[in-house]
Amino acid sequence: MKVLYPGSFDPITYGHIDLIRRAVRLFDKVVVAVAVNIGKTPWFSLEERLDMVKQALTDMKGVEVVSFSGLVVDYARRNNIDALLRGLRMVSDFDYEFQMAIANRGFAPDIETLFLMPSEDYFYISSRLIKEVLTSGGSVSDFVPDFVEKAMKRKLEQNK
Image (cartoon, rainbow, N blue to C red; front, side, top):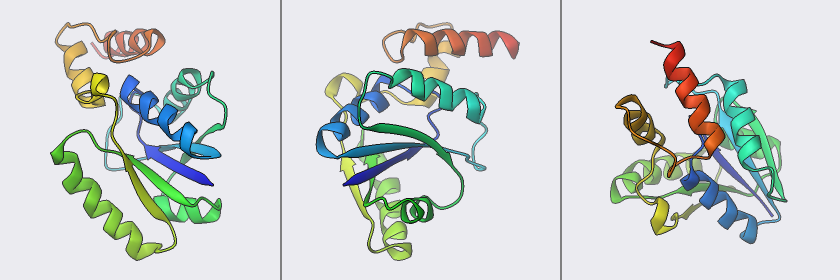
């Protein structure tokens, strides 16, 4: 059975990595899909995000990293993927994720949406929070791999 874990991964965090590690134990294949999201203005280009995700997951077997645009259920259907994986950190995530799951079920009733919670160590981490911490001069080394923190610092310097 294959599961699709879609997201912008701008940047990938230890919370994302934790969910992917959990999914690898449950599924034959985990497809991590980096979204071309026209609704967001990412810090990193699609290619940069793909590279960071691949680098963060090099030690995991059964993981494929791809990019996609359009409806996630269309990508899943075209690629014979059985389920979508979504992470839930806080109650506020549930409202949005529940709405998306119901919409996706309307488009593709044959594709299930599954929710996993990250480890308590990563429960509060979000890409937005990490960007705010770094922009304010704080360290993000507890939230992202070293190479991601370095890439974020380079990006911050370029945008000054």
